[in-house]
Image (cartoon, rainbow, N blue to C red; front, top):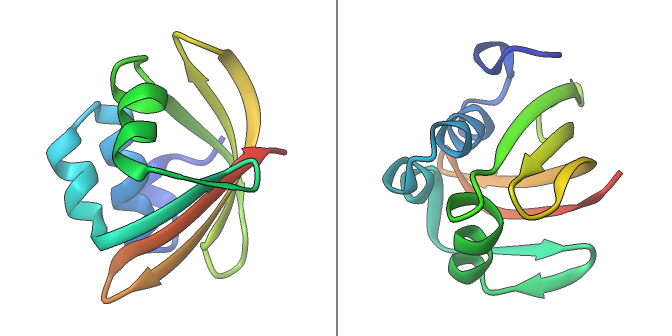
Length: 106
């Protein structure tokens, strides 16, 4: 596993730290206003998705690997709803914040 403090992209690091801390305010701060996302190829309402898949179900990320630019991760993601699954995460970053992320099973 890769410790969060060793993730190479600061915006992605803040995103992962916020999820693992269960910190909604830090999560929102890691995102650009109007940020978007998709799950398994379908665009989702980010706020509703985050509440359901992260915060109300205690989501947690353990990073297995990252791309050279730090914008793609392979993660062991777990929450109280689905248990643990291996997922891929791809990030678009603008102005040091995440403007879009795409996740799905790896």
